[in-house]
Image (cartoon, rainbow, N blue to C red; front, side, top):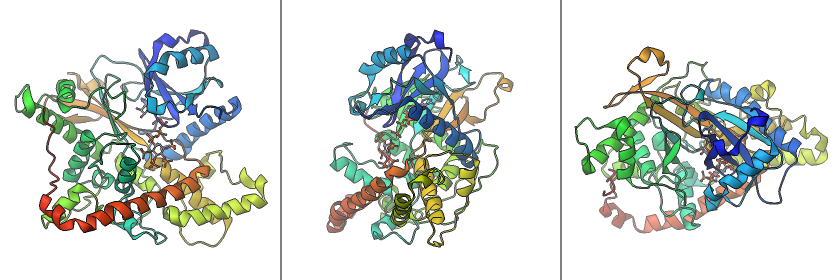
Length: 489
Ligand SMILES: O=P(O)(O)O[C@@H]1[C@@H](OP(=O)(O)O)[C@H](OP(=O)(O)O)[C@H](O)[C@H](OP(=O)(O)O)[C@H]1OP(=O)(O)O
Ligand SMILES: Nc1ncnc2c1ncn2[C@@H]1O[C@H](COP(=O)(O)OP(=O)(O)OP(=O)(O)O)[C@@H](O)[C@H]1O
């Protein structure tokens, strides 16, 4: 960043999550990612610099190793003029969704991360003139725990996402239960993946966003949500997926365009565009292949059909790699929590050891190497507890990251385009796949995770499952078909 040339008018609000806020440059393909904090919980400039540097180091030394060079963009920490940050903060404030305003942008340190704008990613830094479509998916945890430490039987049957949906609706976070189940998306089975993606398109919550030329056009279920209907979405998508059946408008056209999008995204998700080395992780343990709450598998069971095999994801694809990292959570929070307590007891006695244990970094090569020990034999040591705790934090990070898929029509002269290509009915689309939000989850969040896990399972077991048992015969008759009915347009 060139200090003297920072002009807030060149930057616009792009999006935000729970912990960071992103602004995008109007011309150049870059974004600035700022940290956010609750009011009155400010950190010193040094602490913020270190926090951001840790994020970059963790991306470089750990996530690039696990997920592959091509998928991970670590960015760099930049120092900005304080006046620029202050003016920028004022400029974007009115565009922020109300639900996110419980935290303030850090305007005091002057530090931020500079990253490629993944919604416009073609060739880093300069925007091209071809239209770009970008689909962002936050797939969440794609497996059912296999750990023998799990005490709630329900956790061996229903995935965390599907259980959590009920608590989220009960607490008013979302209005409706989604039909999306991460196990369907991670199945590698095209039919299940199509169902998962259509479900995300129906009820996006914070799991799906679509950008066109860098602008949010779909998803993000809050006040800022620009469209929620498929007809308008299909209109946006036509330049990319003009239907092969020749229909230019009407419900059939909408359906055809949405179907094309789903098929193209599935193909891209199954592609192995990464040429990096094969991941060092092979947990090898699998829980059940399906989640009992997924409407897809419930519908098949009702029809007396077996759920299709988890066809298996191709080993080089990002979903496969992400799932492997998620499965570093070998013990489940129930098995992990006592090990966290072991470390806490040790730290109470030897507080000066916190640094040696690398709890707050540095996230370097040595930190990465220790993550590769997948043994689950507890020898009672702090070293064992520490390895499992660090693996858990990394796994939780992978359970909360997002995948960005950028698509743009190929030029006539494709020799200039080095990127992989996916066919669509209108043209061939060059694509790139990236992963974002790879901030290592804090050590301190483990007690919260333990409590939340129990709250999610208890709520699901007591309310939903009990109700389910009582109404099974009626529900079966109701035939809650998993064939997705398109919204009326
Ligand atoms: O606990 P979960 O599964 O609800 O995940 C949280 C996310 O909620 P979600 O369920 O995806 O809507 C949550 O997302 P939202 O703020 O709800 O959009 C955050 O990503 C949170 O991470 P962090 O605390 O900001 O690092 C996430 O917390 P972590 O558990 O990943 O730390
Ligand atoms: N490099 C990028 N290029 C384009 N858009 C980005 C980039 N990084 C983040 N975004 C956008 O900003 C949003 C918020 O970023 P991010 O997910 O990193 O926030 P967060 O606060 O860390 O999330 P969480 O709520 O999961 O903690 C993303 O959902 C994405 O739409």
